[in-house]
Image (cartoon, rainbow, N blue to C red; front, side):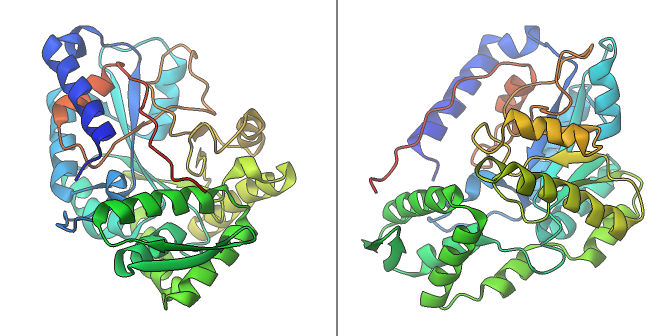
Length: 346
């Protein structure tokens, strides 16, 4: 079930659509859409990551709608070109997928290839190598299965009782935020401790969730697919030393280029929100030789060089919303400040 805040955001978008604003406020050159997981819908009440998922059917509806609305569905190279030139008669949409989830090859690719549309996949190279840690999925598994959870946060042993879907969602949100705030080594240690306590095979869970190199090779052979980089381990760059962050960015590109025997020109900041990277990382992306770097900061792309190609905005679609009307409003350039979720006390 969607939270009250997500319902309110959807209501505002629907209201904007029926007011007609989505039709007369068509600003910018186009938009970059961001997706993560694509898989059939589930009926479980506890789905803390549902906002990051869409169904194959909704992906199909989205592509059909973009064509109906007369958007040009383009590559990242073409989006880059249009962002630097004079506005064109038709606006563009660019489809991008983060995280190299196995769902992309199993559920998204059949839809995308059927429509013969271009799209970009941003790869954190540790995951096809089989050494990445899908810590958020492991956390979801643990909270879903257990009614009592104990762990060490800082120097304190904490104990939680979570029996209802609401309690589980609140705990997941709290622990997810805490884990994300930790340096990479600390997050890995905390995740492994949790998985050890509750008998979750983190390595197997992570490998099953991600595409391997064979999957990516299949995608790379399709001329409609652009392979981009998303570092090696998908860390939060803003809490790393600059030298370590730069190494993550450059090594991710080198590994991908070695694997695919081609230049990798496009980059995605891991997580991509305002708290996950700094201006220094924008400069690093350019220095690393990328043509573009995308964020998850909401917005549309302007023409004539008015949008920084190394901090490109994207519309990160919330999978709890199935309304194409809401999507059309966002594509028009209308945006609303998000409602901040309630946090549990530490």
